[in-house]
Length: 210
Image 1: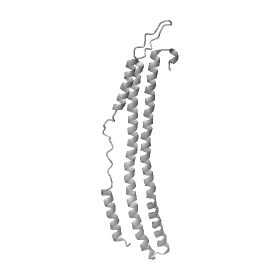
Image 2: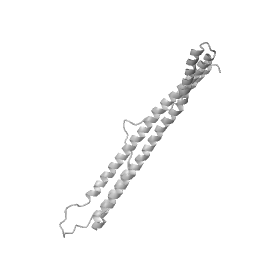
Image 3: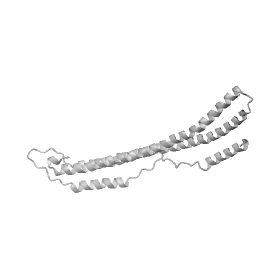
Image 4: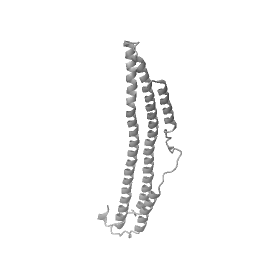
């Protein structure tokens, strides 16, 4: 932009503003990567939901069988077997539902935290770039010129280059600010949660015939 004016100032500032604008576009790409990370976390919730459905269906199917058999053959010895199977199915479903709850809470926070952090990073880096872009524009003399006059030689080439260097340094040095909303590390359910489930399943084996 500005080549047809044969004005060194316009040419130099246009080129360097173009660099700033290009870097703004790079921030959009980084933001998109952050959104992908958030989507992947939400997919984990959907996958876990799908894995829970078979245990729900099994429990529901056995309960329906029991109700039908009670209506048709209330004294059937199969009722005892089905009721035992129902207890097992409920225990298995209890494990699956607890896991779903844990995963949903963890991944929900993880997903939206990733999205919000990406939003903050994009906004703060774009602010950095926009401020340096305005510094560049301030070097361009836009005072009206009378026809026939010559505009003074453009003196800001080195200063404009330094502004780009400053922008690069500021982007490289950028760090997210600590705040009161930092997402705590996920508390792994592997010990206490799995320990309780293991104990529950042992109890089921003790009270139910194999």
